[in-house]
Image (cartoon, rainbow, N blue to C red; front, side, top):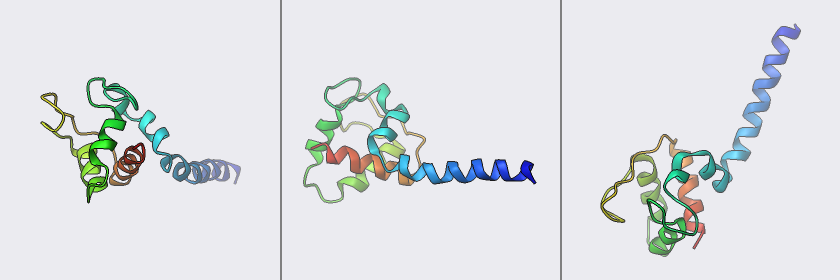
Length: 104
């Protein structure tokens, strides 16, 4: 019986903690490869997240568009260097997009 209960308890704990982590955009950002090319305040390979937020401030549908760019990549929006697609779920892309836009 112990052999079954311990793994089930561990699995249940993992599922209980995951939504709390996923709702924090900054933690999600730091856990993904985004940080290789972006910072919050300064241009690196790609624009700063604050630049992205400012450019999209007040733009209708910006969160959905940004989520698509995060997940599928984009080219030509911020210059000649394309942004590659990222391995994120639709939910993670939406969380990241909302968080980025909140930085404005």
